[in-house]
Image (tube, rainbow, N blue to C red):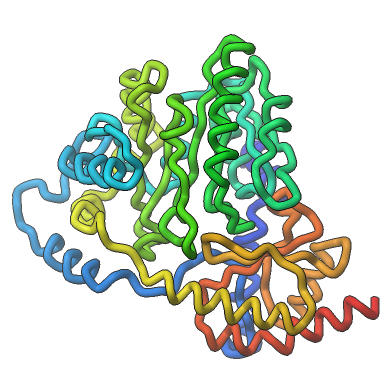
Length: 394
């Protein structure tokens, strides 16, 4: 076999989100784009802020020597300084440019952090429902991804995480606002998590790091996203501007390390090195300069609020139960059939594309990504109603 055994196995279990996205492209080619309602992938269509285009043009026109050349692996100093100032203003921290590494998106940041932190045979924990590609990220670096069920209201189950921590545990991943549930973990839960991690780290004889995955931090509907830095010192936050500025294809993000994290200076050196040895080398130079000037900008979240409300009105009328999202642009919906994959297939028969909850470790539910045109949401109403009616008669 020409490819590795591990990747060969991945091919048969690869991202359900991407598979549905690609099936959607095939359906659109067959029936026409206007005949398909694609809610499969979180690919934001809300335009970036107007300032983005202006600043992009200005930075692209700069003709200074080596403006597109290499820079420190951690990123341009002035970019990291701008990011640190923004974090400090929003989260009450005391970071500076030394505590930031600019990365190729949040996925790049997580891979860099994991490469720096885990040894072969280690474990990384998370509560479900969780992003399905965390397992791939962990296994990239020789660690196992271990999940425990979250609470029925989609809050973290801190006691279950505590029971799962052992001397092999390197880190716990927390994604808030959560993909797929839209849940923002409350500050009380996170403080309990921080106390638990301190206690369990002492008990197992190693520091268990907290990895925050926060690309949806700025996509919220009134609730504040508590700071992980405020609840636990051994924290690395990973994020991107994919959703904040609607720039997922530009692959620009960062990781930030708590000032008081164990061996923080050495960890930051390791992350900068891992940026290079993983093949990223450094985040794109042009995008670094652009986002440095956009720290106070974000997309219009009210567009997502309107779409959320339009989508929930359709689900309410058809009799679906769902988790009301506090953030993100996802709705997590209870499947009327026990087998969520079967129901997602029935929706596909109505030319509606969603993602089964089992892909997120939470069977019996499915995810709708409503970051799409309101006309698509409106024309999905009949298909959702038909699928529910047929499921009731099954």
